[in-house]
Image 1 (cartoon, helix red, strand yellow):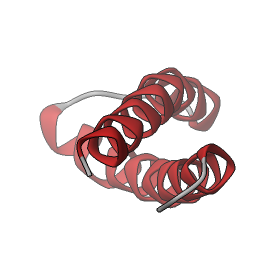
Image 2 (cartoon, helix red, strand yellow):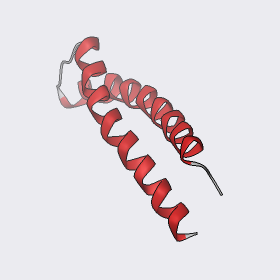
Image 3 (tube, one colour):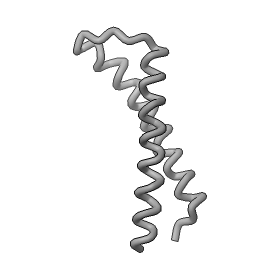
Image 4 (tube, one colour):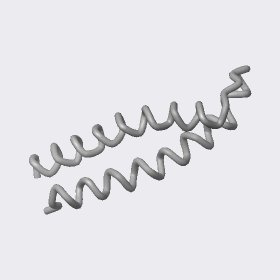
Length: 68
């Protein structure tokens, strides 16, 4: 059984990796759609999704642990 602390560490690791991939993807893909976004804006957009993703990952992990 995974502790709450372990769930949080796993969720944070997952989100950090996802954040890096999301920002890199935005830098590559946005120009394909004619979107000109600064690096700071890309980082800010990514940060907004990081918070949502972290909460989602942690909540789902705890839900599945409860079911187990």
